[in-house]
Amino acid sequence: MIRWRQGSVESVGRRWRGAVELEVRLTQRTPDDPSSVRALAYPALVGEPETGDRVLLNATALALGLGTGGYALVVALPDRLPPDPSGPGHIVKSRYTPLQTVTLAADEEDSPFRSKLVDADGLGGMPVVLADLHSALPAILAGIDATRPGTRVAYVMTDGGALPAWFSRSLSELTERLAGTVTAGQAYGGDLEAVNVHSALLAARYALDAELTIVAQGPGNLGTGTIWGFSGVAVGEAVNAVATLGGRPVGSLRISEADARERHQGVSHHSLTAYGQVALARADLPVPAPLAAGLSSDLAPLQAKHRLVEVDCAGLDEALRASPVKLSTMGRGLDGDYAYFLAAAAAGRHAAALLRHRVRCRDQARSRG
Image 1 (tube, rainbow, N blue to C red):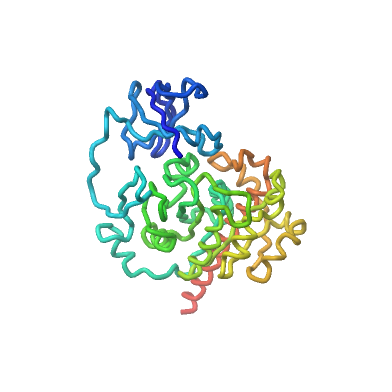
Image 2: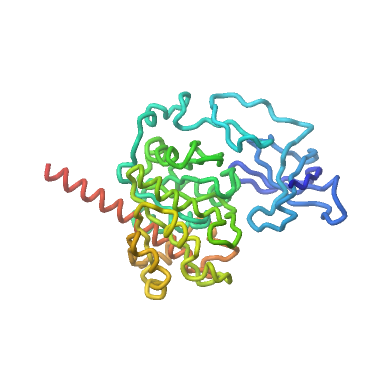
């Protein structure tokens, strides 16, 4: 199940929040292995690697040739273990694996946010954008910024893909744009930790003071090519969580005009299953106006359950091209799968418009009072 390798750090490369790339020369390998491999270490887990360190590697994803997860992962620096952690926290994540880690949940007793969350039971109508893939995050933010600049946005990262938030370079580069990240379920490494999506949403709203929240799994979508066998079904479950807590669910549709796989052409079967069958609550499903006519038959199964909203896309192209992080999904950039990113930006625009409308209505009510 795991391909174990040992090696020595040849060089320390680029780093981003919570992660560092290494070049590792393999000292224990098979004839099919290269002499050196690209590896990734999370210093919070294994300590700070240095040139010459002996490293124990999990080389499974690298051997499988996975695009997103194509690293050997550093499991330990066996000759120079990090000091024992100190501080509060009793919530174990990545539970009962060799690298289970203890975190401080935003709502547990020792948390500074306990008083805000102990009785929190609703989102007060906060718009929440839900996406299948992590790659939608910067495009959704682009749509929000183009519509309501300065909106305070939180990101809830679910555990369908990468568990450490540190794996995402995009998330690291978006730190200044976000009010914070809450890692939910078995995911960890966010600014705040939560036991599940429900408590993560409440932490985003009350601990991070978010006006709007985006929910998506971390990098590394998992799928088997079947109707039900993909990690994105969690999007439908998140719709239910948002509605249960009195938020406003906004579903970002996964749309593609470039994917070679028939099941993902037009409106992806991931969206049709997650919103059409898993989601029990009603959500807004924004559709980019330039694409609406061509997608009418794809969207027909969703019309009875959800509210389809045609979104004006004026200015979204400029916003997407101005994204501070590179837009990429399944190896395709903005122009390589334009419909995908436009749909995500349209979802961000619609959610921001809902928020703008709520604020305007509130101000009008205050003026009448």
